[in-house]
Structure formats: C-alpha cells, structure tokens
Image 1: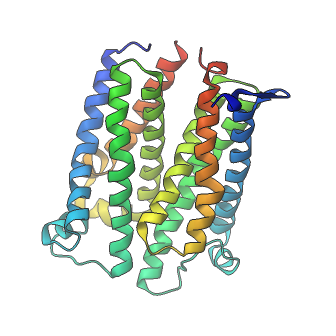
Image 2: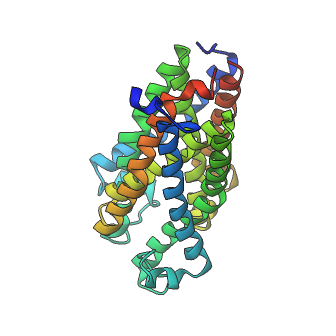
Length: 150
Length: 148
C-alpha cells in the first residue's frame, strides 16, 4: 500500500492509477454513446450483442443493454467528468465522484459474469479494462484519502 | 471517527426495509429458479420464463445482489455504526448502484411493471424506494464526510 503513496510529479501513484482507470472508463461511455445514437451500427462494430430487430429473446436483452447504456450516459458519465476534474484539482468532490464511478465499474462486469449468457470476449474486456483498473483505483484513492478527507 | 446521527439511523432502517425483501426474493431465485412461487413473484402470477436467456439474466442479478450487495450492505452498517469512514464509503457505493439500477429498470421494464403494479407500489417498494434510498445515502454520506 505504501507504494501507492509515492509521489510522481504532482500526484501520488495511487491517484495516477485512478486517472488511468477513469480514462479507460471513458472508452466505455464512448461505446455507450455510439450505441444510443445508432444501435445497429454498434452491433456491426461489436460494441453491442443483441439487436432490436432480432427474435424475442434478443429484443429483450437489447432492452436490458439499452437500459444500462442510458444509465451510463445520464448518471455515470457526468460523475466521471466530475471525478476527473475534481481529482485534477485535488478536491473532496473528485474523490467522492471517482469512488462512486469505480463502484459502478466494478459491479457491472460482475453482472455480466453471473449472467452466464454474455459473450466471453465481452466478459474479458469489461473485467480487464474496467473492473480491475477500477478496483485498483479504489485502493489507490483510499490509500491517499487524507489528501481529500481530513 | 464519524458521529452517528438520527439521519444515520433513519437511512439504515430505510435501507433494511428496502433491501431485505429484495434479498429474500433473490435468495428464492437462486435456490428455486423454476419454482412456481419464484416465477409468480419475479415475472407475474402464472407466467413462465420467456426462455433460458431470460432466466439466466435474472439469475445474474440475483447472484450479483447476494454476493456483492448483501455483504456490502451488512459491512456498511458495521462501518457507519462504529463511526468509520469506510462505512460511509460503502454507503456511497451502494447509493450510486441503487440509483444506477433505478435508471436501468426505469428504461428496461417500466412499461411492463408499472401497469401491473400501479403507481403506489411502483413509486414505493417496487422501484421508488431504491432511488430514494440511494439519494439519501449519498447525501448523508457526503455531508458526514465533508464535516469531518
């Protein structure tokens, strides 16, 4: 844990890891924006799995995925922006927003894993790109919490 | 140390009222996914799973809730009532997830659940409580942590 407190330029290593995790998370939100703008195009490029023009099951799963995409854009994306700016300025609100963003990004890959029917490639991507960096980001920020919470 | 206030108690009791029935239903789902009682509660009275994918998706939510949300909820209570900062951090995480899934379910299934349940049930125990609890938990946690 002590290594996460090591200063590299302006911020500690743990905070740099949090920044990296937030940047990776932004890719997820970009994919969700693409999906909401043109769902069928998102399927073509492999961002989504289930089509609204498919069978009953596919349409039902597409409904779930659209719900997740809307929640990501309305709720998680603004939080990510607040987290990024807040951490850059070393503000308490940045610490809080980053922790909440990471909580979402650790939880939703678990849902994909437990669901069992998700393509294994997607499970690996969401775990390695978002869940693991977010988990390390939580540890990184928690180790440096005294910078934000007195 | 973070002081326990009357609001901490209210949010903890409200959280128990909100999450306990959900956890009982999810336990039922994990133990007997094809049981009549489970399907009556989760889908609708007399209804069947649309197919295996539908069943697996709901089972995914059930496992995630029991393995992640339930231990987090219990440990958050231990944390907040012993005045620990991490207790409020867990409330923040649970609060954000609670609001997140309120949005997901609003988009995903309001058109099915709202007509069958009616406005009172929908905006209280079926959906609304999770949103209200999330907002309350986040507000209270931020207030407690910022006043340290």
